[in-house]
Length: 293
Figure 1: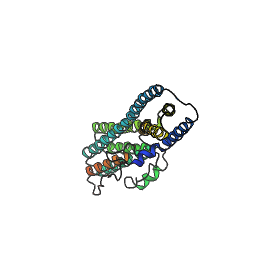
Figure 2 (figure 1 turned 120 degrees about the vertical axis):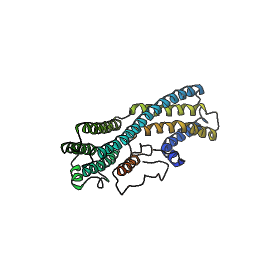
Figure 3 (figure 1 turned 90 degrees about the vertical axis):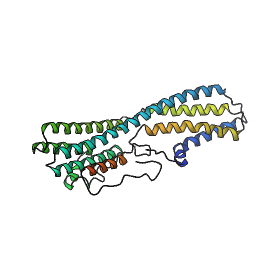
Figure 4 (figure 1 turned 135 degrees about the horizontal axis):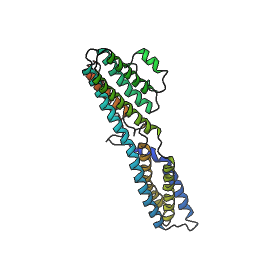
């Protein structure tokens, strides 16, 4: 997630450098060609097209942000339900501290596993401190590691009920919390697996180039040392907004614009270990740059 810090110019330039290079090339070619041929397009055509593209970009940016914000709300729900689960476990089943601790640590593992799975990383990374060796080995056989961890949570919840550590009402409450966690996982997977229409972005991107091409032909009366920089300056906001919309439309791609799942998972770990009275409570992840993961 991009933080409210000074974002380096290299990040902005890195997003649009190839687009600006293409604009510079065709703008220079048109400027040179205009010295030998009469090239002129009325400026009103470019203005009309530019206004239309600006409206479409605004709509696309809004839709992309909606996807990013939905992802952030999902992880907000995961924070709440993870805390609730462990609080319920600790206060409902005081006669089974080992099972409560096991489920609490597994919930931490589930958060990290889900974050990695959504980013197409190894979901089993860094789980050794939260689940035992046998369970970790069993996870090697699982396709969906977060789902397998939730299944283990449900299984141990049933054990608590059979041991009379929790009553029927408490089991229903705990089970509903697990259901909400499963629902949050499903919603996150839906965002991950539902691609934003690529034809929409490609078409809009092409029309940005068409607009800039027409604009270059509308400014041929200017000196090339003025025309080319003007084309580039006008191109920058269009391409930057297009790239921002492209990046935030997929909030689980292991990019600076991601939902900060690793940081959120660390906060969940801190909260759960505090509830469990664990001695080794880690520090929150501190950003070392202009974004946090």
